[in-house]
Length: 378
Image 1 (cartoon, one colour):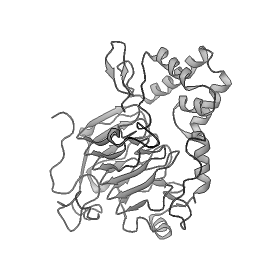
Image 2: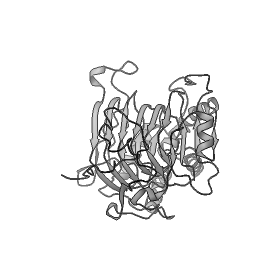
Image 3: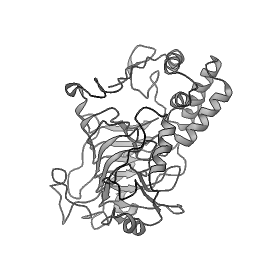
Image 4: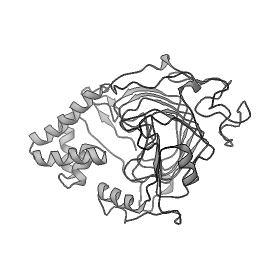
């Protein structure tokens, strides 16, 4: 499942770490993106007009530059792979679909994988990726700071469940806290403190459930909690939200018509990513709201959720306006202030928060009066 990349010294490096360096400056990321495109143009693999088309598509639909080139039919996968290997001195080996697909061999499925206790900061892309997992993927008690792209990624999950439990995300200025995309299914989001919004991405996820989270912060747009899903049995409740001033809308819950349990239009693999995204969007009803009250009344979601502000924490402030700013975890205290709006505002989740200390579980990653988790090396 894991891509194995090697740098100039033939040392294994992570999928988002090329030649041993981590991009902690978003301007450098942009320069690197343009370098890739120019490298393809210099090799006459794409023309300037084709490169512009792919960059324009990336602005609209997101995704990687290479993915947009492929989806637009401007480059084939083999040529792109060889060009990237030559340009960046890396070799990419992607596992792909599970063995035996479309009837996967059960004993070979990627299942029962844990990511916990990690302290990850200053990443050019995602903090943690469950990409390609099948069942029982558990991502819990991690701390993520300063991520250029969406922090918690599922791209895709083959059925799930993928669990995100008691994680902290601070400062993910492009796209927000989560990256639930590529038609993923079966995602559980419990007790996370997310100082970055939740926003949709192309190829919506299905069977997604949010409980007992705190969601504050903003990214390049101002909505706080925006969900697109192809299943009307996705759900959300008992969360704490802070809408952003000046937002055109703060909440979105876009699903198929409510009379339908689910809707998965199109045939798998027959359309490009952009075409499938557009087809799915036409099949969903877009519902957007300025206030939590309006959103809850219209959708039946988050009827027990509450509004919060940064004063629920002992010491947490909103990220500043410059997305290139790097913040230090030591400067923050995400513990809840006793008596604040996030305390005792959650719902009991058997096996997850049985040890809560008050009348009901608290919202977010930390329970008042309980020991704090250890992040990083032990």
